[in-house]
Image 1 (cartoon, rainbow, N blue to C red):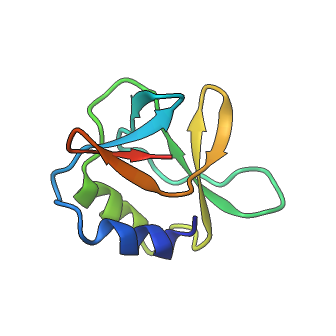
Image 2 (cartoon, rainbow, N blue to C red; image 1 turned 180 degrees about the horizontal axis):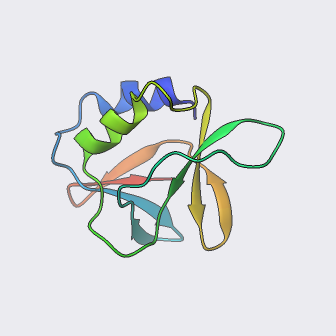
Image 3 (spheres, rainbow, N blue to C red; image 1 turned 90 degrees about the vertical axis):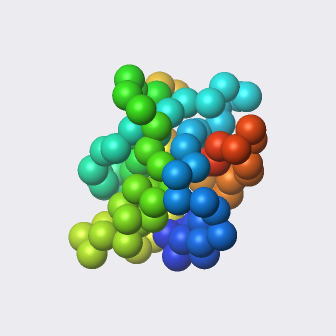
Length: 99
């Protein structure tokens, strides 16, 4: 999923909704982290998840996605298993689960 597509999907979600990454049915928090670029040919933005901390909120993720220095292309989530692409999200118990 590209940054612009995710922004469109997040537009209708309440700003204080917590954001998690769905890893095999387990919600991993997505704490605030800067963008990083992977060392691969296809450029992508990386979000780091699973580290201790409070989960990012919808408005924080939207602000991060709108930063001028962020990559314009695909978003990958970095987990303990390595970078994983985001294909969308679903709402689970009033939380956003990226997946």
